[in-house]
Length: 65
Image 1 (cartoon, rainbow, N blue to C red):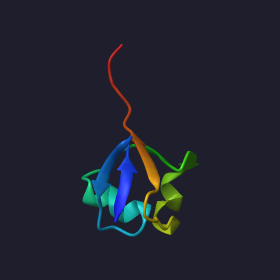
Image 2: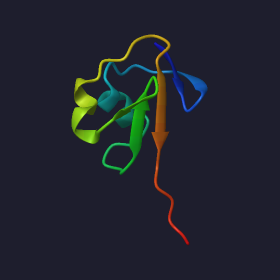
Image 3: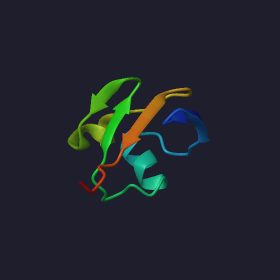
Image 4: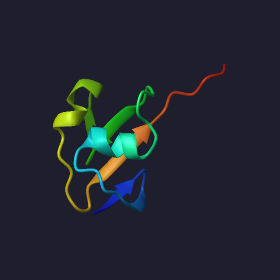
């Protein structure tokens, strides 16, 4: 299915947010996530089913000062 990942269209096979994050290489990394503008905590990602056209935002913390 096609999702919008950080504003860019992307073909994704995963059906849940957790599967998509793993597919994109974010598994085990500390990131903040939102689906269609709603924050999704890490403990809920496996429960969030995705649909064609959903908007996913993934933000990784930056280091530095």
